[in-house]
Length: 360
Image (cartoon, rainbow, N blue to C red; front, side, top):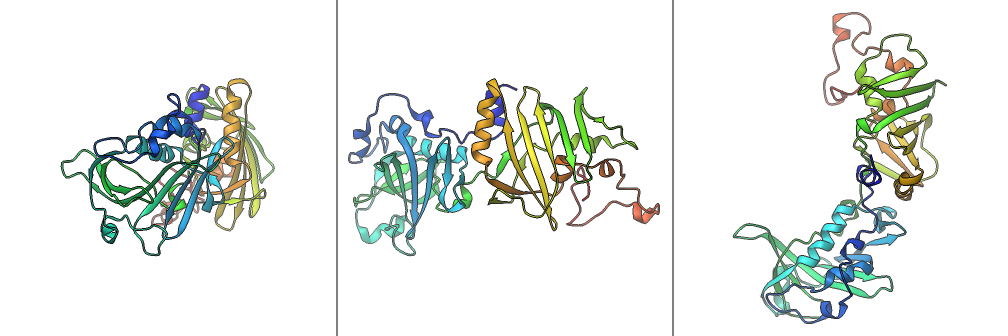
């Protein structure tokens, strides 16, 4: 796995979201002129977006701010947690591709019908989108109204107007600018495939130090020797700890809630080191993560830490036994309990674990 694949697998596309739009010399004067039919709504915008550092989305008098903070973009009403890179890129790309088709009403009394009424008023349907540079100067200002699929198919159309102007427009394009911060945060912590992990060392609540390695495509317990056979699925789940690793809740904190259940260190095949600390609070499992890397992996580690430092995450329960397994868990067959047929039956119902995941 090279540095590029590490960035992709770890979901670190939050870096320099706007930088990909720097295609040439700035032409900012062109994007603030009067709109006219048949042209791009913001000619020359791609170059100017390289200077974007803040996005404001206002609706019904409330404003959501998405701002660049160091190497990442963060969401204001989510305690400045990292924003979804692909959603940001989609928004900015949509602005560069937005094309005016035909003028519509210029009567303010009819704006509400198009969803273009004043976004600062309670109950208004319109959304004000502003993209600002580092000095707070607007690069883009646009009121976004009703959206719909094009009758002829092949895309969407949307009603728009510029703040301070009465002319409204029907435009071709897709602009996703929700004012709800929950729609903007990236809930994926990491996504490293099973085959990318080379080794793991776990220190668990039982005081055990367990060492694992990948051999012939399977996870093996290197040390200590297991006192009983281990199901291969349980071993392989350990190296799947960072596959689609996401959270249902996050907190800005340096301390984990509940009682510590252990910590672990995973190493990828190309030397990226991932550290996890896990705790349990009632039925909830919490974890925090950090990374280290040298050479080509330093960038991936630095970006991972920029997103995750100072945060703790509630993760799905089975991840605890993947991140900090115990020998007792690994060597216990969940289907063999009291020895009776009924007791040996697997759990059923809404609280049962996934068929391929261990019971808690």
